[in-house]
Amino acid sequence: MRKLTLSIHLAVSVAWIGAVAAYLALDVSAAVSQDPQTLRTAYLGMDLVVRSVVVPLAVASLITGLVISLGTRWGLFRHYWVLISLLLTIFAIAVLLSETRTISTHARMATDPSTSTEQLRAMGTTLVHSIGGLLVLLIILVLNVYKPKGMTRYGWRKQHQRLEPTRKAKT
Amino acid sequence: MADPPSNSDRRANDHTVPPGMPRWVKVMVIVALVVIVALIVIMALSGGEHGPGLHNPAG
Picture 1: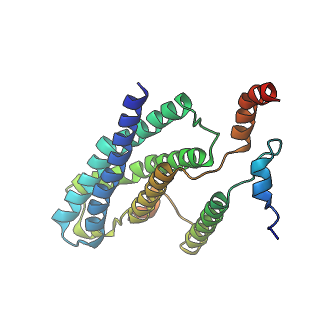
Picture 2 (picture 1 turned 90 degrees about the vertical axis):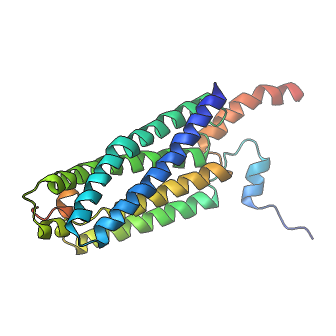
């Protein structure tokens, strides 16, 4: 069961990064293109990718990450790399959910035939958030692969409580 | 003459002292603070607006 959860967690987490990369491609085309048809398509695609792929994968990554952490010796608050990964994931999801409103607004305007080419060109992009989000996800990935050493005070206390009977028995 | 053990070595060997925050965590915290301050400054210089309204031509 643990390996199955880990496999799902790895799949959805890596897929989350891939989906953000795909979103970024659309975001860049919305930023650089002056063609109204390309802009409309890009904004619609961004909305579709975010709502149908990025958000579900992000939530699945958080849930499976919590299950793995709580079900193994790593715990959730015992090691700095786990704790920081959790905080960064929550931060990324919070920004993502907030950005989803902007992206939906852009898509609504893009589908509206009364939106002029000038308005389409002036809508802007979410490049700062998508590049920032991708960087945060890559930091989380590196932390999860390298698992740098460092136990929190809480983790140290828990380990101390677990090892204390063994130590006393030896002495 | 051997070097005296560092604080981290003493902590690692002493089972009664909780470990300190690792250097890589301190570096990450400092970098995060710098990024947050930079974003606040950029937002303040760009008029203090943030969120969906910033991207919309109407608002």
